[in-house]
Image (cartoon, rainbow, N blue to C red; front, side, top):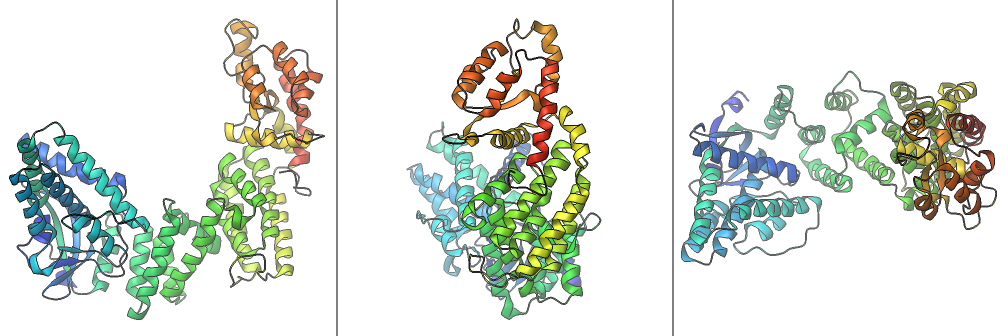
Length: 581
């Protein structure tokens, strides 16, 4: 292991070029190509910045791209244990330079393209200079490494990343050559090739075993070269796993990353931890996960399977999958996550979704909506207290209920008695920690809402007021400011009165729901005009009630209506009858 830290400088050309006989191989079970557009853009900036610095005579001899960890497998093969993304992106850029050179249509362009192919993308009889891992190898060969690439369809997220990187780099290079003749284009391509091949270097760290490599990853992470928690966790799981389990772990992890798509895997792992073991305010997530696996002697393949199983449920929640959650529950979760924006609830949603039947899950989401609306929206209390309640409940739900082992569907067997007891516990805890009715009565008249909150609150109040809902689509109505956002300068009492009313623009008393057509017509009109629309044309009882109760709209009217709405707020967000949320 001591020799592993004897790093040497290696250029990309030295690693991939035909001067060395060894091909670089990504281990079979390593993750695929994960760089997104922002990473490719940064790589391109490294290339062009060095070129510009060379032109200005301020560049160092070489440009450092970071460390790369390599392990010799045989005389012909070297495994790249860290550095795949940079080498793959370099190969993609080589392919772009090759194809643009060939497209110039002149002999010198064809010769340059053939040289790039034979000297950097392939190593003669040894085949391609870079061999990707199991999930990406065939796609990478056919769309990047072939001298005349095919248009093979991307099947996986990593394939789409490869295609995106190719598109980005092609556009970057053609933006430099579009206005040039063939000789001018080739001059640009040769300059880029020189920089990429010879001037960009990495600190090559040799290791004897994968265990040595994983240890280096963790060391680099602690020394400030931050790797993501999912990367570190996968490295740890693979390091600790027997060879017979590694294919399963890699497959589970690939499936999980594919399901997550563009969603934050790090956030999922944190929410998974919180939902099972509690908060992590004082400890790094990776260290906590590693410590737990080691202390509990959990087989790494079992932990990978747990992550994959929970990920399936997590994705169904965050994507509002009505097919699995149920249409009503999906709508309720949307209100929590999007309209009143409460991501701290995800660990509790994950725990209850994986342990409750569909109807019970819907019930708990309603209770959570009552709590969040009272706590965060109306009383505007500190979010840290809300997190403490949710995180503790998430852990308690798992300890109070059994983990069903079958797929979640309508025939799944749940422990109804345990769930009923758990629901009662959740309700009691939320009720005890929520603002009281007296607190709500004091807060509502002064309530200033955010746009998402306002749509949710006023829509639920409008439904509660509606006596006849036939052909009424409140969910398709618009939020209406009675005193408008953009009144005419000479209306609404002029500048003096508008300065009085402006602070009440988002006050609950100044808001209503109104059909889209009427909303456009009423717009910024005076209240006397709006009142006629509310009274004569609106099908919503909420708007009609405003016309009935108020002749003038001023500060006193806003405060009065806010006070009147308090009674309805208490009826809608009621722990004992949460059906209206």
